[in-house]
Every structure is written in C-alpha cells, then in structure tokens.
Image (cartoon, rainbow, N blue to C red; front, side):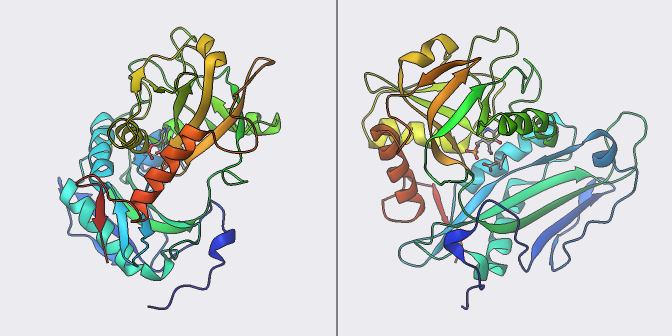
Amino acid sequence: MQKANIDWANIGFGYIPTDKRYVSNFKNGAWDEGILTSDDKVVISECAGVLQYAQTCFEGLKAYTTEDGKIVCFRPDLNAERMVDSCKRLEMPVFPVERFLDAVDKVVSANAAYVPPYGSGATLYIRPYMFGSSPVIGVKPAEEYQFRMFCTPVGPYFKGGVKPLTIRVSDFDRAAPHGTGHIKAGLNYAMSLYAIVDAHEQGYDENMYLDAATRTKVEETGGANFLFVTKDGKVVTPKSNSILPSITRRSLMYVAKEILGLEAEEREVYVDELKDMAECGLCGTAAVISPVGKIVDHGKEICLPAGMTEMGPVTKKLYDTLTGIQMGRLEAPKGWIHTIV
Ligand code: PLP
Ligand code: COI
C-alpha cells in the first residue's frame, strides 16, 4: 500500500484530514448502522445540544505500525469503556463497546495510507466523539446524537519531543469534587483553555492542577496524568476521583510493577512532597510520557534532580517498555495489542 506523502518525522500534534471517517446517528432511541464517509463536514441544528450546552464527550487512542509491519491499536477496549462512562454522566446514549471497536478497525483500515511507518516517530491518532445534535433550548439532554470517529497522523504532543517540560502550579481549578473530571467531557477542556493560554504566555508548557477542595494535592494537567518517581525509586501516581483514569497511566503502573519489578503506588500526592521527588512525567495517549524538569509553585522553583536535558532513568525505562510494547518490539501483556491489519 502506498503511504500518503507526509513528512512523518516533522509533523506536530495537529489535524491533517484523512480519507474516511465513521458516522453513526442516534434517532428515535436507536443507533443507525453507521457508515464510513469522505465528508468531513458536520451539519446540525443551530440549536443543537452540543452548541448550546456543550453536550459532548470524546476519546483519544492511537494506531501504530509495528516492527514487523502490522497496524495495531493499544487497548481500544478501555477507550470504548471510558466513553460509556462519559456518555452516562452526560445523559447521552451509550455507543456499544463492540461497535466502537468495529469503528476503530474500519477507520484505521480505510486510512492505512496515513498510519505513519515504523520508526518514523509519528503515530495515527484516532478521535472518537459524540454530541447532542437535535435542538434543545431548555436545559435538558438532546434527543438525537451523532457518534463520529476520524483519525489524523500526529507527532509529539509537546514541541521539542522528549525534552523536559517546565510546568506551573495553577491557580485555576480543572475539576470539582463530584464534578466531571473523571470523564472525557468537552467542557473540561473548554474551561481549561484560559489557563493553558495564560500558562503559555507566562512561558510554561502546562498547568499542574490541584484538588479544588483543599488545593494541597496534585491532580493532573489539562491533558495528561502525573507519574512521579521518589528518591528511593518508587513510582507514585496521584489517586483522585476527579482526574481522568488514564489508560496510559494504568498501563504504566502495571509495567512498573509486573514487568520492571518496581514498587508502584497510587496514592494522594501532596504539593509539599514535590521537592522530594526524583523524576516527574506526564502520561497520556498524546503525551506518551513527557518528562517534567521543573515545577514552579508561585515563584518557588522545584527542579527535578533528573534535570532539564533528558528523561530520568526510571521514566526512560517506563517509556522504552511502553513504546516497545506498542511498536511490537516487546511482548505485550494479554489483550493489550489489537491487530487491525
Ligand atoms: N488526563 C486528561 C485530562 C486527558 O485528557 C488525557 C488524555 O486522554 C489523559 C489524562 C490521559 O489519558 P489516556 O492515557 O487514556 O490517554
Ligand atoms: C489524549 O491524550 O488522547 C488526549 O485526549 C489529550 C488531549 C488533550 C490531546
């Protein structure tokens, strides 16, 4: 198969339209059978639920070309399940897990020319999403919905690839206790835009959000969970009901414990402890594991001993193992790799 004419090594995390996307509509209480289409435009009511009250959620996963030339996807079942949770919390109809998985296969197969080659440094990002498409003016759920899935080749989420990031402790909150931080609602991202633009203007790569109730505990960033490595080599990740249950983070905690034989713990992490950490990374589908070199807490600089030039040694081991599994260089735990082509 002829690959698309793309300079794979130099693309960033942006939108490059591909040939086909999947669309299914929910009407009269049922999903239609869904189609692949070349039409990248969405036509909905001016009063659609998504446009008035942000009734929308999304997912993000990636397809990879493995060392032996297959096209695979990483744990798509967990994205399908998390989307079910998001839909339920937003009073949207659930898109069945099997149909989500079938749509991933269809979209990736139809756009195989856009799956970056092995070793190129790029991957195919898949974006499933759903929104209320019928009119609502009183505050209530829409009656009709559209589920869509497109894909786009992407490079690293953060400019500079794996160069350690500088982040700041944010004065803005991302999620309230008992709110929507644990689901992938579009509204969580809309309200983070002010904070991210401000962070960038002040020279930071990202925000570290704290728990809104006490502002003493680390939550996550706008698009990734945190992983820390303590000075005695333990991998620690914040436990909270108001952060997104990252599939990458859950996978890395398993890799740390079961494959690398490290101690790994999910627990509350206090801002006061940050100065004692040896390494820090942001983990997620888009971020993979992006190392953090410096955390700035209201003028106080916390410099991670791992430094500003490269990933710390434990982060690097986690990164190499995870990407090794995703690219087919290392044996995957059962059920983690789904072969598409
Ligand atoms: N946290 C937030 C807020 C995110 O948007 C994402 C991305 O999906 C993650 C964490 C990482 O989750 P995952 O590893 O499932 O991509
Ligand atoms: C992902 O990692 O898939 C995400 O959705 C993060 C997003 C903010 C790009």
